[in-house]
Image (cartoon, rainbow, N blue to C red; front, side, top):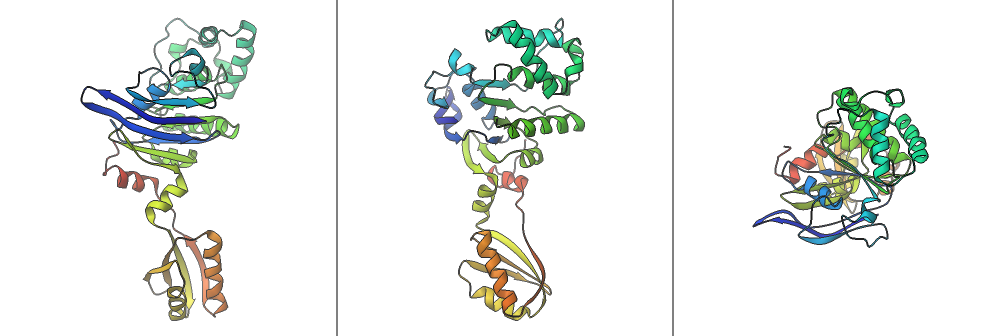
Length: 308
């Protein structure tokens, strides 16, 4: 879907984005992470054609159109981190205005706008002036506007910034709903817990460079060097330790009174087979579980401890 190749942005001797290469498949909900100044917003603006790149290329799907061209912009729905001021426009007029910018017919704008306002739970606000809406409502309206022309790619830059907890939940549910409908979404955010709940893949930037990217579970496993398994044992701990030490790919990390922690780089099926061997050899278990990775600790590890 989104192909970024060697994308670079220089400001004199300062490199804001340093030869970034990234592929985001169709249907992904991709989370862009990084501390302030990492280059996320600069990258997003170059993808959208709002900022000229110093080098590299961006392609969406099969199009070979230049970044910033009308053809490319029709493929993108963009939600910036600020809304702007619309003192004298009602919600319905706001949607009409942007629909006309895309050359849509009036009857199509009205029909599609009605559907989108219902999707973002603003159907009852059509005759309300935009400037009187809460920030959360404005952000949801901005999402509806960005979807008017049915773009292939929806890009949101810090959509939850400044929202209260209820509005953040509403935005998160909206994005998850759009993802379930098959929309490809790129979202940048500092709220790591929300990205972990929403996204199926992530990219982490630091000082203009893409540090890592991929499926969340794959990135976590790669950096952890394998899966950590906690095995709760009632009896015959010595036998359990001996069996685990004999297994290729398994390493016993610690042994407590009723718990053994191992690391294993294999598949879930291989791990289940290991547990089965313990049971077959008379070891009594009460259960086992895999240690879940933590997105925040991963972020801190890769960006040198900065979340801002």
